[in-house]
Length: 130
Image 1 (cartoon, rainbow, N blue to C red):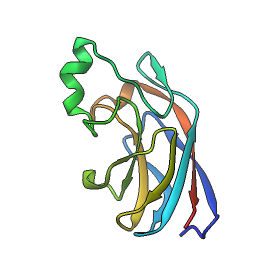
Image 2 (cartoon, rainbow, N blue to C red):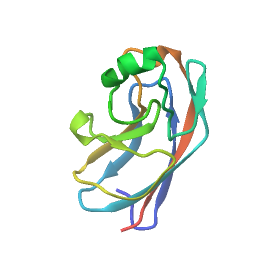
Image 3 (spheres, one colour):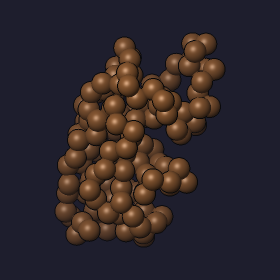
């Protein structure tokens, strides 16, 4: 458990279905998260905010993304491995109150079977602020 003011920086790899941050979030506590760097979805480079694409291929498959309403390749978080706990981090999430306790995982928002063509990594800094 992070103490108030404690920070942990972890590497989030684009080609991993799950990235274990080794941080346990505690329900009701508040955390800030900041990501730097770029990663690539095949040939599309972006930062942790991801990208939106309206071409036919992307439009026809967007509902199949792990988090369908979030942008392609947005940095996402999860408590445990449940889709019910997915939340968008992007480049900056200044104050996130954990709704549940559990291990904190991250991933690039992509089609579940397409992680093989992802490249790059982000550095995510997690700070407990309350």
